[in-house]
Length: 238
Image 1 (cartoon, rainbow, N blue to C red):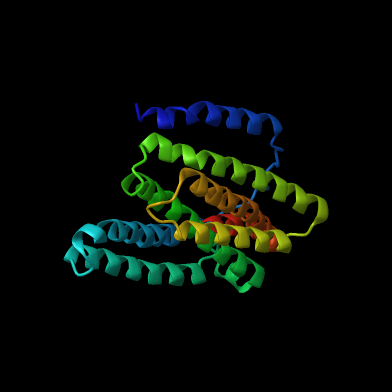
Image 2 (cartoon, one colour):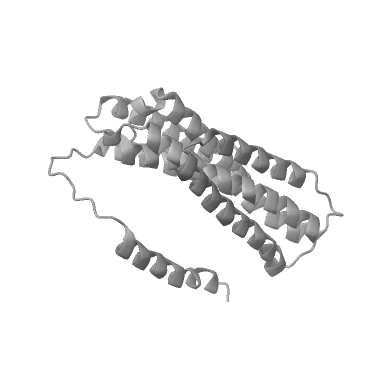
């Protein structure tokens, strides 16, 4: 049944855990006191959760519905509190100083735009394939398999190129161009589109997404202060 969609990932997760356990280097932590940013943690949750609830319910209720309006108001208020808390916390959950570093700010914007494009495509395209072209759920899902392999191949290749040459700007730009090209080709599809056409559009976009995403993560990690490496990586991905 559909539940195997989740079960099939369990062996892969176990394999990944074993590989990490056996190969990941152990770095002993330095003994020091840490101050948890409790206000930042609570206000972050109060910002994101109501925002997601509002955006998920607005299609059924409308923007003027009291539930949606209340959720958005709570999200805005919590966001203001979160920014205030992060500017004053001793060890902020999301250090504002990171966004003053131009490289990190630009890379975070790139991750945001690419992520919005990719997940928007993952949500909308199956509806188009099934509702407009009349494909089955299995057939529409199979069209994404070559794209996933293209993403994996491009991700591995771009990582190797960066590690061997130290150059990343060309890969970041080329990945963004390929992803944009693939999305543009998909945007031109109509009811007469064939599966082969869609497949090649997805492969082009997959190469772009796969090449650009790991590069942005590396850029952020190289630009961040060593003491804020974890926070910088998590902030960019968030």
